[in-house]
Length: 188
Ligand code: S3P
Image (cartoon, rainbow, N blue to C red; front, side, top):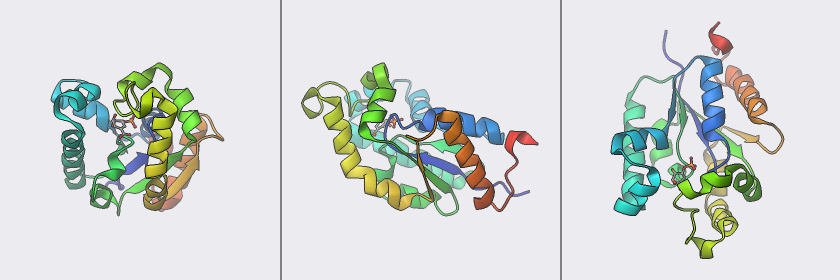
């Protein structure tokens, strides 16, 4: 049987892409790939180090290459690219269609609160950016990207309204329609 298309979760850092992606993959019995984790594994260093050593443009090239691989791979994966992936020219179009793109929407204040100490792992939000105020930095990303997230999404989930499991359940319910009822949660 043909694999269903990839499911791609997009949104700001801290919007829950990794958490929801893991749950979604488990619930759908599909493989999960977190872009940052995969890139860190391949490069042998954390994303913050890649930014420091090679710069953002190099990191974006790695995101693009990984996307090319996934385009050419069999579908059926749950993918969580980093928050800036949608800004890399043409990458969204490499996967969609046929991929289903789900935007996990959240206010800058909310994602900031969710990230907590994880903030230091995000080079674009770490100290030194936007006069050292992470809310200013995340506000800026939201202003730059909010419209793009919405424009490329097949579904927007307002994550302010639900916990991680609630968001996952919404995604599963919608995917069963998107994929023409071919989704079988829990690997049934
Ligand atoms: C980035 C988000 C990060 C990571 C990198 C750049 C961004 O991923 O890819 O630090 O440009 O928003 P998360 O969205 O998983 O934090």
